[in-house]
Image 1: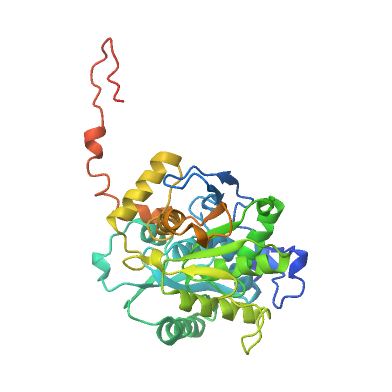
Image 2: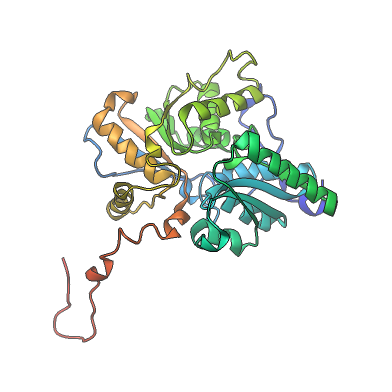
Length: 375
């Protein structure tokens, strides 16, 4: 453990119901602004017999906002305890997790290496949104082809890079997959579930809905729901890969903490969460005009900012399900877990949605006897 970093570690007071789990973290790093509020949400398009609430994990920080920082509290503690001075992860060029990872790394005095998937040349990738913030904090960026598989292609490169860093600098590097979705990172949402129980969220809530991009948030919610004996129905809106892929990833995390046996018996993802493949739409991080206009409309009606990669697609599909498939839900009180990610809005894709914004601007040059109010 590096003396210069160990002072960031604080003991983790795990919920008592996690006692029987394997690998409960002993420490965390305090990075998130937790106890995020749960609010009533007057979401447009929702049938009158449903009530929607929102868990505001978009308020876990400023540039660290979203669900990723909850996971990173445990991942960075693990990295520090292993004596690492660098962290390596991967994702797309607008990855929320990569952005949060490199900012956290710099906050703690560590270096960040990001393996980002794109088929574009570096000069053709706009330095905007999350990718801008990656460069703002000096992350080391490596571009990989988009057709590379995580386990067969990306992981070997991450391990090779970690080995090279240690060989050339004598310092260790910590590797973590997309979204920080490991049995360590998932404790961010084991802890978040505990936070929601203390907020009495499950006294009336019947269903919890969240975006599913890598599986770590889903795994933490499943563990919390199972161990506390709560009966809420969990729904994951799949925005990358497929439902079966995420079930496999979550099942591995459940095996790691020994809630599932190696033969697949015990707690399973398939029996614990309803994963819907529809929200991915045109593909990961690809937006339709309808989705972007929906994001605009939600902001203008409720003041809640959704992102185009995760929460926007998820809420767009949630409203569709409430309208066309209400029997999917256990009850009528739905909690949406807002996992943050607003910086992807600033990559230019919203320009067409607001192309006519200048026509709605009133130019007020002269002070007269009547204000030029537009109703």
